[in-house]
Image (tube, rainbow, N blue to C red; front, side, top):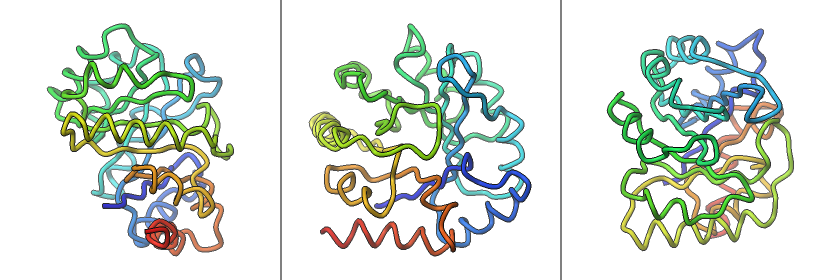
Length: 220
């Protein structure tokens, strides 16, 4: 499966309903919501209110990526708001396994995100608790950054770990995904792709989603 998750960080907030409808009509699998607290990363974005608003606009899964300190403080309110996937950073909290378990108990899928310089070995320690692994292919905090080429090798190693342990968790990539980079990430083993400016910056956002899929399959 190839999942495309447009990032609403790149949508026009003045026309949010229209921008959501465009990508849903284009075949988006998930909507990706970046939550930043201005502390873990140098930017401030959305909260539970945005998740509630998006849930009223569509029933496709809301893939929420928390770039915040102490993500455990957000679990209940984001579950109540309608989040489907709750992904937090291994670097942002001391008790990763405990919080993965709490996310699941709240009724959401539990994901773990790794920054570019974060080693992959922490995945192995909690692999049976993971519903998703997110490899950051940029340093988080801002949209529109360029894909870090070294991420391709990291994706490949992450895929080997998931396969070794028999995990069916999606392997997601976030950062600089476009027509020029998605095939490398897909060939390395990723199956879920966050794209913001590549989709919302296109002349036809709806048409860009199948085009990104085509770029993956063209390499097979």
